[in-house]
Image (cartoon, rainbow, N blue to C red; front, side, top):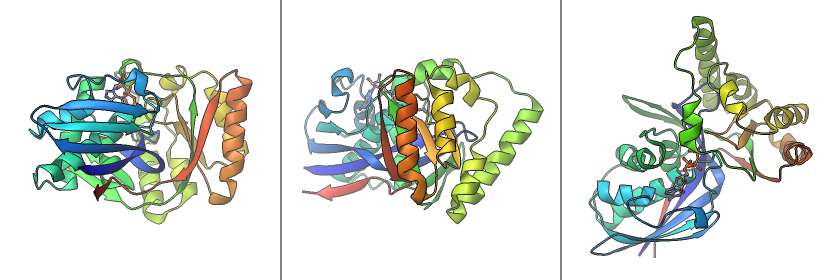
Length: 293
Ligand SMILES: Nc1ncnc2c1ncn2[C@@H]1O[C@H](COP(=O)(O)OP(=O)(O)OP(=O)(O)O)[C@@H](O)[C@H]1O
Ligand SMILES: N[C@@H](CCO)C(=O)O
């Protein structure tokens, strides 16, 4: 039996749609695997009642298929599905690391990125790797058609999850097909600023670089209370605020000393909009970790 803990992630960071991602210290999924003639899946934990145990419909089933590694797979969900914290990706990343070790496939973490992304193709229709890459590698990741770059950033964040859901498939449906050159130029500038900020562990640069006028405004319209939550977080000291992944989670970047006040302000603002929420006070953290029982 092998056990892997794989972290929640926040994709896009505003200016890096389908490219940027970060691993979070908490929450995380824990996946246990044992060799078997056929893949079976059991699920417990956060939102488990909404997740199919059929291997044909679960991201870990797609990973087991891709690695030709059938197993009894137990998933303990720490990352609630459809919340914007890469729930489906955390399970897929954990399964990729666990099954790679269980069957001695010898693939590196980088080589496991496209394998785990097969799970994302199953649930969202596209094999975007911006959640599985940070869950596998940790830190800040940049995913392109040519591969993955990674920086061991460590910056405080608050991830606030309302008790509502947005499916990634639906949120991809509102992404515009075109953008003006002016918006593209602004977004490239912001993405570059954010990347410099990650290399320097600088919350000011990262926060400023999260601004995006192309995809984010379309998505915030799907999140009740977003504008109030963003304003409240900025007022409490956040250096930048954006939609986490496809939403409805909201990610704030900050200095450590402001984290508690920002978490409280975001939960209060959702509450004023009549929506319960939970805030994780965490930081950009490490990737999936393997334990041999
Ligand atoms: N192992 C799994 N864990 C979580 N969700 C899964 C899993 N396998 C399949 N799913 C399905 O994937 C969907 C959730 O994925 P979705 O991409 O919408 O959310 P997310 O991964 O939490 O968010 P995001 O990608 O925006 O951060 C749900 O329909 C769920 O049933
Ligand atoms: N880049 C993806 C991440 C969510 O899974 C999106 O925003 O649709």
